[in-house]
Length: 311
Image 1 (tube, helix red, strand yellow):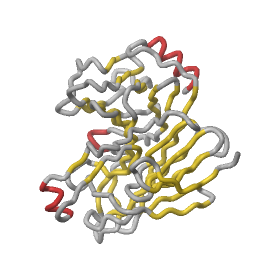
Image 2 (cartoon, one colour; image 1 turned 90 degrees about the vertical axis):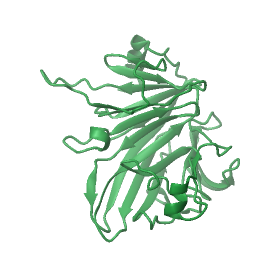
Image 3 (spheres, helix red, strand yellow; image 1 turned 180 degrees about the vertical axis):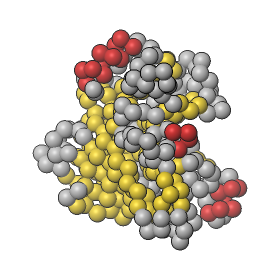
Image 4 (cartoon, one colour; image 1 turned 180 degrees about the horizontal axis):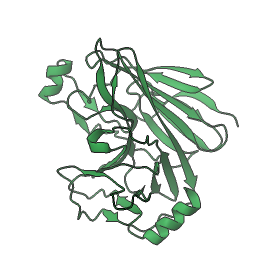
């Protein structure tokens, strides 16, 4: 079957555009966000977290002071666009209104209301291939302020609980110099039992019983991360630009997990963006079926999986 598009109502997220082919389905919210709220094999389990209870939100005084009385940001789940470096309230724009969309030969472009307070306008373009599960996701931010702004485009995929993330470590030979850069957040415990550190890979397990959060950033030169869940594998491919300046000390990839979900986050280079200029940050996703997840820390099995399916 060719690609089809239809407006549907999905759970308590309101109207969504359903994009599907014979292999995969993608749902993007139209009443909020936008969020890519569902990405799955056709009829299969959703790889994205869905916050149906609206349990993850920010509505503190700083939000009301900045955006107006009663302002609240909800994670909702799924995939979203932000700008980095992270700050509150700026990043936590209350994107709770309708989203316009346009279907073109290049995919579907979703356009929320511009963030006048922050001086940015965002667009999300989603293009599903006719054959297979691959999706190209273009995350775009335009500076609509009257002065230059420094930011990076930040693309966050919030994944369903219960899976195992595989992160590749750099392996290029730098001789006597270091070949990888990492960032750790104040709450990150390197002895956390959810994470296993290997020579070429890191695995991070999402645990619904976890009491604390864990966050790691890195210069991911190999350009991918993966998440194994219910017999399938989600692969997120991301760019790395040599000699570019990245946020958070040089991070083009960050991951975060807590009791509710796990995030796989990619970032564009940090740059000064002139008024009226736009920055595009492109990822590709795919889902592979019938993939047995390795045990956490079983790096022989991880290596075999990567060699067979990813690299």
